[in-house]
Length: 389
Image (cartoon, rainbow, N blue to C red; front, side, top):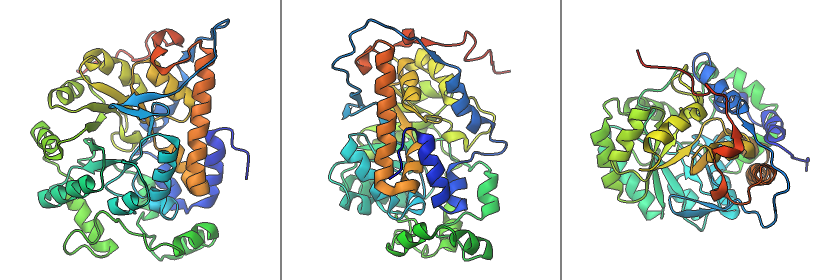
């Protein structure tokens, strides 16, 4: 086994292991990818304050997210097509998260179904919902999540319309890959991935195929999906979905102070400051830039989490020090999954926890609840002087 000391080590292996279309699916953003890049580069602008002669014994990264004990303030973000990054990817990632002690969030657009993941794990996981126009399907989907024991619902609000992702379009992204000459040439160099895929029957969107009348193959699936994202979504519908679920609810895709205020009003338990990993509105500000203004506006009313751009334990530390109660990793654990399956996801989590623990100690803190802005050095104009016209 190679020595893994950071997330980039996993990324290098991941790139060699998986087909190009699925690597590009994870490692890309929309349009010019400006927001995708700044999600990570903006973290680099924040510095840490080193403190010495502080008792560093008995440290712990343990915390809570929406009342749930977590080994560190990190959850695995909902990522579609995990079962194409590695055979049975959702099950493997959920197992790794469960054993490590952090939440796993299953995407609506997963390859393994809700039932598959429930059968492969022993503890509750979270479920992510895309808002769709087929209310009957949504009701049945939520009931399936309840039946599986899902302990929280994450409603994604920033994908009413899919952002244009050039690489996905050019690669002809599909699950499973279409039998084109270009794909066959690429797959011929990814033999380990192919052997794993031959050993599973899960190769299509398990939460949809077989659960929607007339959707039985990739062509009918994509036609149905393209028509389903709810362009008419508004806060009344969000409130209705929260009531329909009746349990812990997290609203994902908040990047504006006014939207954060509305999210607090409709009764959600938490919000995720997120720009969908830079895959939706290119040119939007990074999540970490928007965290402090949103914290200032609603941080005493609702639990605030953050995703988009987390690649290290230091990124987690910075987000939590600025007020976030939790963070989500997406690409970081996908690299591990594609590189080495369940073992790779565990490795990614271990790297992040080690980085967070060491950095926290060198900043003179022993507990997550002790983290505060005073351990950071933030540029004076970090949030910028952006104002709506």
